[in-house]
Image 1: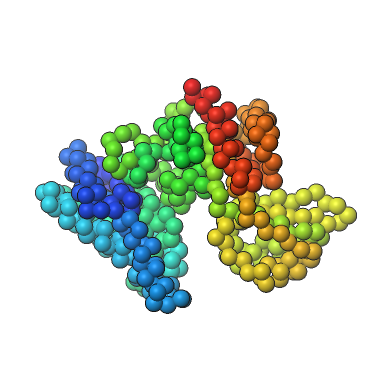
Image 2 (image 1 turned 90 degrees about the horizontal axis):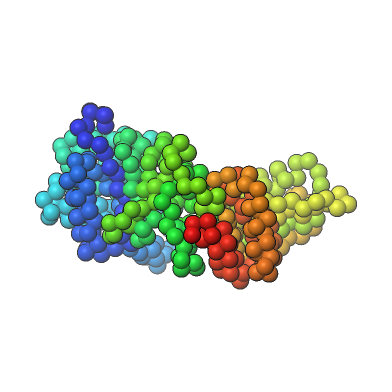
Length: 412
């Protein structure tokens, strides 16, 4: 049997850890699933580990050994989602809703063999489809799968979101709802801008930029999958019955707003390699060497050449681990004079479809920041985003000023 043989449309619901952090919240999730099923929908529910379970399991491992094997960490951490799936299945059964829980392996999620950061290769959803055909709700452990050798693997950050979208794509689901502790995607972090407003709809590209630039509500990997397979996404509250934010294709009607959101990311560091020879191949050698160390570079700026040398500056996630000895080796390899690492910076991002081609937007952004006396260390732009590296101490002031000037004015 294939998904197309089922008599009802399929809905995939994903519950984050904070949304099922207690027995009462698990029971609330079960009631929501029961309501969806009453609307003549087949339901697949993907769950994260309860609350801070993953952090607690990680701490336990560190108490046993300073260097836990990655394979064993995957086995250990996968237990968090297994706990969630079993408890939610029990709660559904208590409500009289037939339900069955599946691990990632039982759900047919096949990954590569990179422990702690596995990528999904394919999904074989036969058991899931069979359970749905028997009118059962399938509760699936997110964040996990197995490789070709039947070894348990975990998907890394955003793994449960990724599991949900991948399963929705494999099943041809009508939509995938990411249910969390917020009501949707906002024009800025409400903790910084109290009057930030919820966005009713975003394109896949806009959401992907926001996810990669500090918006924590969705992980970029899941948005990439949704865009690739055209999976309709909704980000909504797990506990409130309110419309969420729809992630849609460009061919659907969109609000006519140039700037969608102002996002922030404090978890970055700025690295400058000074006085690098201005020769072909230097940048290739530099960033190949950093790539070999697993360094994910976010933004790159090369200064104008002076007397045959220039400076190359880039931004990396602040949790990037670059040994001084390794960085010194990289600098010496490319003939640089020295380097500077600045941890007191942040990324301030203005996101919107077509932002770069809208006349006057860049000028307004820089005028607003100038009025706030905020200096810009680096600037990068694309059709979807203008990113500014600023001092971390200036970030909140900058976000509030830009939101007031660019979004509240447009949306009333």
